[in-house]
Image: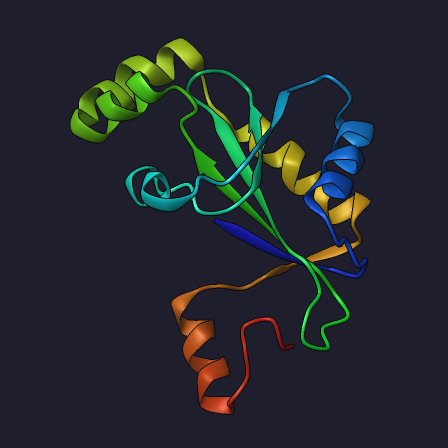
Length: 150
């Protein structure tokens, strides 16, 4: 997962989606995903609204937004890689050799896709990537700060 701290105050996922559409055009499939409610949320793990971008059935990114709150003057964008196709996701979780050999041969590398989204977030939203490594987290915790504090 990559986390970005933006210089813009993006207050809604719809605003973020329109900005992404403007920058990416129709290059990748994009859909808004509404969070599940009640017991379904527990079963599916879909607890948050998101924008799902898909290159194909194997490469996808879930875009999450943390809007400004509690005196923050920035928004936080999260890019979370995932496998869009449920059947492929189940197979890859249970058969590593298929994932490493067969699926990558069929659908190719997702590096260009992930790099495109990384570049769009950095350029379009004037963002900086947040170091969310364990080492940095401990350093910031010792200082009494959050990983978002620089």
